[in-house]
Image 1 (cartoon, rainbow, N blue to C red):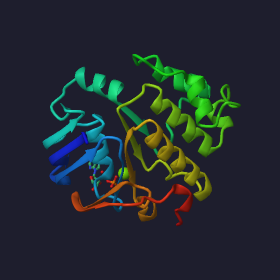
Image 2 (image 1 turned 180 degrees about the vertical axis):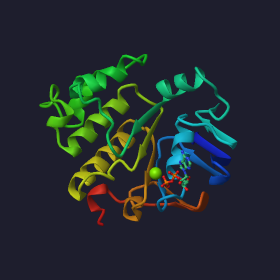
Image 3 (image 1 turned 90 degrees about the horizontal axis):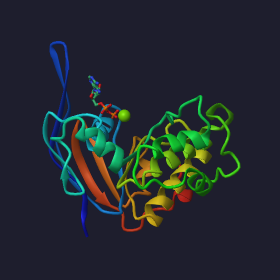
Image 4 (image 1 turned 60 degrees about the vertical axis):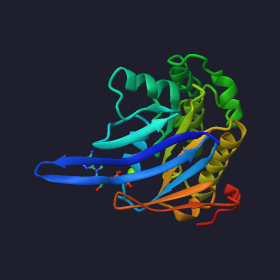
Length: 234
Ligand code: ADP
Ligand code: MG
Protein backbone atom coordinates (compact mmCIF):
# COMPACT_ATOMS: atom_id res chain seq x y z
CA UNK A 1 0.00 0.00 0.00
CA UNK A 2 1.33 3.40 -0.96
CA UNK A 3 1.98 6.15 1.51
CA UNK A 4 -0.09 9.24 0.70
CA UNK A 5 1.24 11.51 3.41
CA UNK A 6 4.41 11.23 5.42
CA UNK A 7 5.04 13.65 8.28
CA UNK A 8 8.52 13.62 9.80
CA UNK A 9 9.63 15.40 12.99
CA UNK A 10 7.39 18.30 12.12
CA UNK A 11 7.77 21.44 14.20
CA UNK A 12 5.95 24.74 14.02
CA UNK A 13 6.71 27.76 16.20
CA UNK A 14 4.72 30.97 16.25
CA UNK A 15 6.51 34.05 17.48
CA UNK A 16 4.25 36.25 19.61
CA UNK A 17 6.46 39.18 20.50
CA UNK A 18 8.88 37.80 23.10
CA UNK A 19 7.06 34.50 23.41
CA UNK A 20 7.58 31.46 21.18
CA UNK A 21 4.50 29.26 20.93
CA UNK A 22 5.52 25.71 20.09
CA UNK A 23 2.39 24.58 18.27
CA UNK A 24 3.96 21.35 16.92
CA UNK A 25 6.86 19.71 18.75
CA UNK A 26 8.15 16.95 16.48
CA UNK A 27 5.17 15.18 14.96
CA UNK A 28 5.66 12.03 12.85
CA UNK A 29 3.20 9.65 11.17
CA UNK A 30 2.30 8.08 7.83
CA UNK A 31 -1.04 7.93 6.09
CA UNK A 32 -1.87 5.11 3.69
CA UNK A 33 -3.42 6.04 0.34
CA UNK A 34 -7.20 5.81 0.34
CA UNK A 35 -7.60 5.86 4.11
CA UNK A 36 -9.73 8.16 6.23
CA UNK A 37 -7.67 9.51 9.10
CA UNK A 38 -9.12 11.45 12.02
CA UNK A 39 -6.80 13.93 13.76
CA UNK A 40 -8.21 14.17 17.25
CA UNK A 41 -7.25 16.53 20.04
CA UNK A 42 -8.46 19.24 22.39
CA UNK A 43 -8.50 22.89 21.42
CA UNK A 44 -4.97 24.26 21.10
CA UNK A 45 -3.33 20.86 20.55
CA UNK A 46 -2.05 21.84 17.09
CA UNK A 47 -4.62 20.21 14.81
CA UNK A 48 -5.24 23.19 12.54
CA UNK A 49 -1.53 23.98 12.40
CA UNK A 50 -0.79 20.42 11.31
CA UNK A 51 -3.53 20.38 8.66
CA UNK A 52 -2.38 23.72 7.27
CA UNK A 53 1.20 22.48 6.93
CA UNK A 54 0.03 19.34 5.12
CA UNK A 55 -2.20 21.44 2.86
CA UNK A 56 0.55 23.91 2.00
CA UNK A 57 -1.24 26.86 3.65
CA UNK A 58 1.76 27.48 5.89
CA UNK A 59 5.40 26.39 6.11
CA UNK A 60 6.99 24.45 8.99
CA UNK A 61 9.74 25.62 11.31
CA UNK A 62 11.47 22.23 11.01
CA UNK A 63 10.75 18.73 9.74
CA UNK A 64 9.15 17.40 6.59
CA UNK A 65 5.82 16.81 4.91
CA UNK A 66 5.70 14.51 1.89
CA UNK A 67 2.51 14.15 -0.11
CA UNK A 68 2.35 11.63 -2.95
CA UNK A 69 6.14 11.45 -2.72
CA UNK A 70 6.57 15.19 -3.19
CA UNK A 71 8.23 17.23 -0.46
CA UNK A 72 5.77 19.99 0.37
CA UNK A 73 7.65 21.46 3.32
CA UNK A 74 10.35 23.05 1.15
CA UNK A 75 8.09 24.44 -1.57
CA UNK A 76 8.01 28.20 -2.07
CA UNK A 77 5.63 30.29 -4.13
CA UNK A 78 4.44 29.81 -6.83
CA UNK A 79 5.05 26.06 -6.40
CA UNK A 80 3.15 26.05 -3.11
CA UNK A 81 0.04 27.54 -4.71
CA UNK A 82 0.28 25.07 -7.55
CA UNK A 83 0.53 22.20 -5.07
CA UNK A 84 -2.59 23.37 -3.23
CA UNK A 85 -4.49 23.94 -6.44
CA UNK A 86 -3.70 20.57 -7.96
CA UNK A 87 -3.56 18.21 -5.02
CA UNK A 88 -5.61 19.43 -2.11
CA UNK A 89 -9.30 19.93 -1.45
CA UNK A 90 -10.18 21.82 1.74
CA UNK A 91 -13.36 21.85 3.83
CA UNK A 92 -13.63 24.29 6.73
CA UNK A 93 -15.84 24.69 9.78
CA UNK A 94 -17.43 27.87 8.44
CA UNK A 95 -17.88 26.67 4.84
CA UNK A 96 -16.18 29.78 3.35
CA UNK A 97 -18.48 30.04 0.34
CA UNK A 98 -18.57 33.25 -1.72
CA UNK A 99 -21.91 34.83 -0.71
CA UNK A 100 -22.51 36.58 -4.05
CA UNK A 101 -22.15 33.37 -6.09
CA UNK A 102 -24.68 30.55 -6.44
CA UNK A 103 -23.91 26.98 -5.36
CA UNK A 104 -23.00 26.09 -8.92
CA UNK A 105 -20.82 29.19 -9.36
CA UNK A 106 -18.99 28.57 -6.07
CA UNK A 107 -18.05 25.11 -7.29
CA UNK A 108 -17.25 26.24 -10.85
CA UNK A 109 -14.95 28.97 -9.59
CA UNK A 110 -12.54 26.39 -8.22
CA UNK A 111 -13.07 24.08 -11.19
CA UNK A 112 -11.84 26.81 -13.53
CA UNK A 113 -8.47 26.82 -11.80
CA UNK A 114 -7.92 23.10 -12.23
CA UNK A 115 -6.91 20.94 -15.15
CA UNK A 116 -9.16 17.93 -15.56
CA UNK A 117 -11.96 19.40 -13.43
CA UNK A 118 -15.17 17.48 -12.84
CA UNK A 119 -18.58 18.93 -13.79
CA UNK A 120 -20.00 21.24 -11.11
CA UNK A 121 -23.63 20.25 -11.64
CA UNK A 122 -22.76 16.53 -11.52
CA UNK A 123 -20.96 16.96 -8.22
CA UNK A 124 -23.76 19.02 -6.71
CA UNK A 125 -26.22 16.29 -7.70
CA UNK A 126 -23.95 13.75 -6.07
CA UNK A 127 -23.99 15.63 -2.77
CA UNK A 128 -27.78 15.84 -2.96
CA UNK A 129 -28.13 19.42 -4.17
CA UNK A 130 -29.39 18.83 -7.70
CA UNK A 131 -32.44 20.96 -6.91
CA UNK A 132 -30.40 23.82 -5.44
CA UNK A 133 -27.86 24.57 -8.16
CA UNK A 134 -28.82 28.22 -8.51
CA UNK A 135 -29.37 29.02 -4.83
CA UNK A 136 -27.13 31.50 -3.04
CA UNK A 137 -25.39 30.44 0.21
CA UNK A 138 -27.80 32.56 2.29
CA UNK A 139 -30.69 30.55 0.82
CA UNK A 140 -29.14 27.24 1.94
CA UNK A 141 -29.04 25.57 5.36
CA UNK A 142 -25.70 25.03 7.12
CA UNK A 143 -25.62 21.38 6.08
CA UNK A 144 -26.40 22.30 2.47
CA UNK A 145 -23.67 24.93 2.48
CA UNK A 146 -21.18 22.38 3.75
CA UNK A 147 -22.25 20.00 0.97
CA UNK A 148 -21.55 22.76 -1.57
CA UNK A 149 -18.15 23.17 0.07
CA UNK A 150 -17.51 19.43 -0.29
CA UNK A 151 -18.46 19.58 -3.98
CA UNK A 152 -16.12 22.56 -4.33
CA UNK A 153 -13.31 20.59 -2.68
CA UNK A 154 -13.88 17.61 -4.99
CA UNK A 155 -14.21 19.40 -8.33
CA UNK A 156 -10.48 19.47 -8.92
CA UNK A 157 -10.31 15.70 -8.28
CA UNK A 158 -7.83 16.25 -5.46
CA UNK A 159 -5.29 13.72 -4.27
CA UNK A 160 -6.02 14.69 -0.68
CA UNK A 161 -9.16 15.92 1.06
CA UNK A 162 -8.52 17.93 4.23
CA UNK A 163 -11.31 18.88 6.64
CA UNK A 164 -10.90 21.17 9.65
CA UNK A 165 -13.83 20.53 12.04
CA UNK A 166 -16.19 20.21 9.04
CA UNK A 167 -19.16 19.49 11.30
CA UNK A 168 -18.16 21.94 14.04
CA UNK A 169 -20.85 24.41 13.06
CA UNK A 170 -23.64 21.92 12.30
CA UNK A 171 -26.29 20.35 14.48
CA UNK A 172 -25.93 16.65 15.30
CA UNK A 173 -28.23 15.23 12.59
CA UNK A 174 -26.85 17.44 9.85
CA UNK A 175 -23.32 16.73 11.01
CA UNK A 176 -23.88 12.99 10.62
CA UNK A 177 -25.08 13.47 7.03
CA UNK A 178 -21.96 15.45 6.20
CA UNK A 179 -19.73 12.80 7.82
CA UNK A 180 -21.55 10.13 5.85
CA UNK A 181 -20.84 12.02 2.65
CA UNK A 182 -17.16 12.31 3.59
CA UNK A 183 -16.99 8.56 4.29
CA UNK A 184 -18.71 7.90 0.95
CA UNK A 185 -16.31 9.94 -1.16
CA UNK A 186 -13.37 8.43 0.69
CA UNK A 187 -14.60 4.92 -0.16
CA UNK A 188 -15.95 5.49 -3.67
CA UNK A 189 -13.14 7.67 -4.99
CA UNK A 190 -10.41 5.93 -3.00
CA UNK A 191 -9.56 9.40 -1.78
CA UNK A 192 -7.19 9.98 1.14
CA UNK A 193 -8.98 12.05 3.78
CA UNK A 194 -7.56 13.80 6.84
CA UNK A 195 -10.21 15.22 9.10
CA UNK A 196 -9.61 17.28 12.21
CA UNK A 197 -11.98 17.17 15.18
CA UNK A 198 -12.03 17.66 18.95
CA UNK A 199 -14.94 15.19 19.16
CA UNK A 200 -13.75 11.71 20.23
CA UNK A 201 -16.97 10.10 18.95
CA UNK A 202 -16.06 11.12 15.39
CA UNK A 203 -12.78 9.26 15.80
CA UNK A 204 -14.76 6.00 15.67
CA UNK A 205 -15.47 6.48 11.94
CA UNK A 206 -11.78 6.81 11.04
CA UNK A 207 -9.68 3.99 9.64
CA UNK A 208 -6.97 5.50 11.81
CA UNK A 209 -7.16 7.97 14.70
CA UNK A 210 -4.13 10.12 15.46
CA UNK A 211 -4.46 11.80 18.85
CA UNK A 212 -2.63 15.06 19.44
CA UNK A 213 -1.89 16.73 22.73
CA UNK A 214 0.15 19.89 23.26
CA UNK A 215 1.71 19.67 19.81
CA UNK A 216 2.73 16.03 20.11
CA UNK A 217 1.32 12.72 18.91
CA UNK A 218 -0.15 11.03 21.94
CA UNK A 219 -1.41 7.88 20.25
CA UNK A 220 -2.04 6.34 16.84
CA UNK A 221 -4.83 3.81 16.75
CA UNK A 222 -6.18 1.73 13.87
CA UNK A 223 -9.89 0.95 13.92
CA UNK A 224 -10.41 -2.56 12.63
CA UNK A 225 -14.06 -1.87 11.96
CA UNK A 226 -14.68 1.84 11.68
CA UNK A 227 -18.26 2.79 12.60
CA UNK A 228 -20.56 3.99 9.85
CA UNK A 229 -21.21 7.67 10.62
CA UNK A 230 -24.91 6.93 11.15
CA UNK A 231 -23.93 4.96 14.28
CA UNK A 232 -21.92 7.74 15.89
CA UNK A 233 -23.41 9.21 19.08
CA UNK A 234 -22.49 12.31 21.00
P1 ADP B 1 -6.18 23.45 17.40
O1 ADP B 1 -6.57 23.52 15.95
O2 ADP B 1 -5.90 22.05 17.85
O3 ADP B 1 -7.15 24.14 18.29
P2 ADP B 1 -4.03 25.27 16.65
O4 ADP B 1 -3.19 24.56 15.66
O5 ADP B 1 -4.99 26.27 16.11
O6 ADP B 1 -4.78 24.20 17.57
O7 ADP B 1 -3.10 26.02 17.70
C1 ADP B 1 -2.03 25.37 18.37
C2 ADP B 1 -1.31 26.40 19.22
O8 ADP B 1 -0.69 27.37 18.41
C3 ADP B 1 -2.23 27.17 20.16
O9 ADP B 1 -1.52 27.43 21.34
C4 ADP B 1 -2.50 28.44 19.41
O10 ADP B 1 -2.79 29.50 20.27
C5 ADP B 1 -1.20 28.66 18.67
N1 ADP B 1 -1.39 29.36 17.38
C6 ADP B 1 -2.07 28.90 16.32
N2 ADP B 1 -2.02 29.74 15.27
C7 ADP B 1 -1.27 30.80 15.71
C8 ADP B 1 -0.83 32.03 15.10
N3 ADP B 1 -1.15 32.32 13.84
N4 ADP B 1 -0.09 32.86 15.87
C9 ADP B 1 0.25 32.55 17.13
N5 ADP B 1 -0.11 31.41 17.74
C10 ADP B 1 -0.87 30.55 17.06
MG1 MG C 1 -8.28 24.23 15.05
